[in-house]
Amino acid sequence: MKTNLAIKTQNLTHTVKTAADDLTILNDISMSIEEGESVAIVGASGSGKSTLLGLIAGLDVCSDGDVLLYGHNLSKLDEEKRADLRGQYVGFVFQSFHLLPSLTALENVMLPGELKGDKDAKRKATEFLEQVGLEHRLQHYPRQLSGGEQQRVAVARAFASSPKVLFADEPTGNLDSENGKMVTDLLFGLNEKQGTTLVLVTHDASLAQRCSRQIMMSSGKIIESLGKE
Image (cartoon, rainbow, N blue to C red; front, top):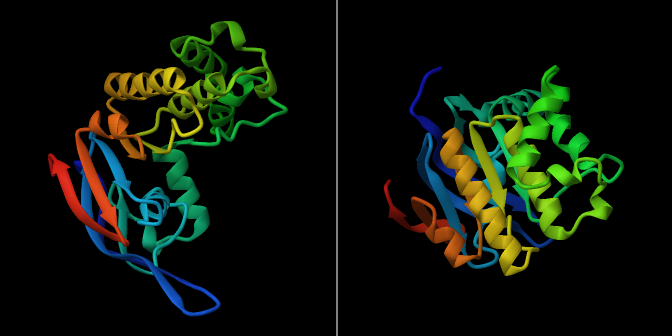
C-alpha cells in the first residue's frame, strides 16, 4: 500500500489496569508523520512519550483507536504480524544499548541482517561500523567498549537493517555531552543520507531542536506541535 505517510494515528487511546483503577496513559491522540521527517516527542516524565513511541513502533497495541505504519493498521494485527512489519520497516536505538554481551560489535550489527537471511550482512555491518568510527573495534565485545562506543554500535546496528523508520528512546540519556553529540550527529547524518524517518523521545532540548518538528506532550495528550505538520 503506497503512502507518503510513514505513521498515522487516529483517536489513539491507551489505558492500563492498576490495582486501584484503570489508568489512561494516552488520550485521543491523532497525528501524522511524513516519510523523511525528523520528529522529537518531548514532555515531562509521565506525559506518555515512551508509551506513544512503543505504540507507533508496534511494540504494543493501543486500547482504542488506530495506528498505521506505512498504511498497515497495527491495531488490527497480532504480535507475529506486527513483528514481521517491524522487521520490514523499523529500527530501534534505546537508552540502554541492548547489545548482546556474547557477541562482538561486528556480530551485534550483523544480527538483524542475518535473521533476515541477508548474505551481505557482514559487509554491510562492517561498513556501518566504519561510518560510526569503530573500524578498530569490530572484534571487541560490549564489555570492552565505553558507553559511547556501545551506543555507536547500537546506531550502526539500527541503520544496517536499512529501516524506513528509526525510533530512538532517549538515545543520549546515558552518555556524556561529547559522546551524546557524536551519537546525535550520527543519527541525523545517517538519517539525511538514507532518507530514514526519525522519531525521537528525548529530554535533551538541543537534540529536540535539531528535528524538523517537535511534538509536545502533557498528561497523555499532545498540547503543541512546532514545525511542519
